[in-house]
Length: 238
Ligand SMILES: O=C1O[C@H](COP(=O)(O)O)[C@@H](O)[C@H](O)[C@H]1O
Image 1 (tube, rainbow, N blue to C red):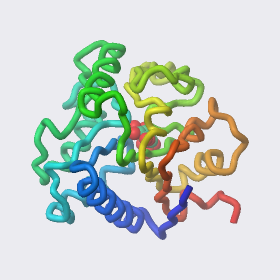
Image 2: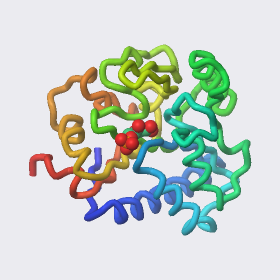
Image 3: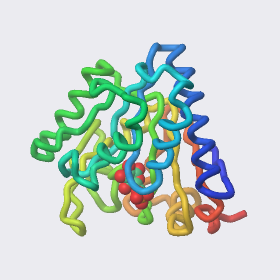
Image 4: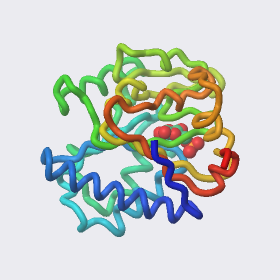
């Protein structure tokens, strides 16, 4: 695990953008394409905007394929949609529809999850493994839509699963931990004092996956890096 600490979110975003491009170049030269899982939530939008604005000529974007680590069970034009957020931010890159794999939220939640899993298998073959998975961290230590106390935390049968959040009374569709952990690289993007307790629990707390689901993220063969600002790690022991 590598913890990259920056003075502020902007410096962290600059660094993760450069890291994204470096990994893209490696994957494109090694296997001819770069398969990335995007995160939703509050932190990554600025990263996507920066990639679109400053790095449009840095790589061959026609060789980049984008997926979603989780999606809100809403229409694609709903303000909560991770697809809408990412495609709006990345619009200047003119990626084709074939490069952005959206969750079909017009289906019922279970079918949407099954169909997204099928879609991954069509793209990757049986061995689904991303070059890079971007993740956020919720104040409650969830990542993707692996929320505390949910049964999806222990699912090792599916790559993708629907999850019902009792408190919010909504469904989400999420990658499961075993799929995320097959990635070559995993990067958490986490900012602000509001995340300080969650990071402390995940990195230094007692092991309790049900309470702190991000503890599930341990790549089988790859590397996990955190890109954080000073406020987010203010509660870690020195
Ligand atoms: O990985 C992820 O983490 C976030 C945490 O979101 P935030 O809004 O608290 O930063 C999560 O909700 C998001 O959908 C996901 O992709």
